[in-house]
Length: 307
Image (cartoon, rainbow, N blue to C red; front, side):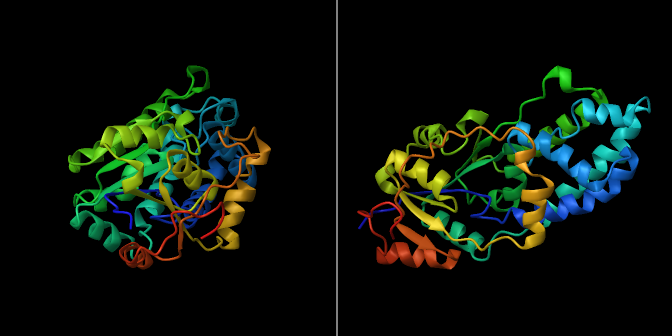
């Protein structure tokens, strides 16, 4: 039986749900700010979505950059834009995100891993600043050995039409990153956007930094094409974490209101013709993970897509 000394975890969709808090935050924020811009909720969502797609993250820290928002604000004071648009929008998102709990059993299982001296590592495609916020309560207790997520880069200067909006957004990112100082035993690393899964660069960096051998580690994640692919690339065991479909309202926010088809789609390192990576176990609840490992209830010789 394989000895597990390290676990690598995806975060959104694995440790925490993403769609519920994001949908709540967006649906609360848009009606508050649309009247100040003189646009419909639908158009505002589409324009914000276009900027999120361009940044390749729903947690884009600068969603009001660019000519559209400059044109809608006109000659009004830039400070008023921050007061009436920027702050209400991000306050709604931050409140919804911070109120979003971990999946049932995730905290107990992660702490059990840590108590058994099993390293727990987060590898996320989300923005690093947001990932730290999502995990701050857990990390503060020393349960997580490392967090690797995508660094936030300032927009192109040509897109910054409101310096006060940029200053507020940049300071918000820095405040979030500073939370990492409250858990000094956790290694926190920002990855470049091109390291987004299924590019294995981030996982290989994590393994090198933390001294992890593939044969002693288990990867747990909800996305076969992303998490499964990077695990397969390095020869690591992969447990697929099952998730239920998002409610229609959440799906509408992410897939319709913020439709990536309305802008150039995000870049992906995934090759659609590549074979599906192997799944060594399927878990639908966090309470299943430790018993499955202790029993050796997984197959190290599976074929792609099998369990």
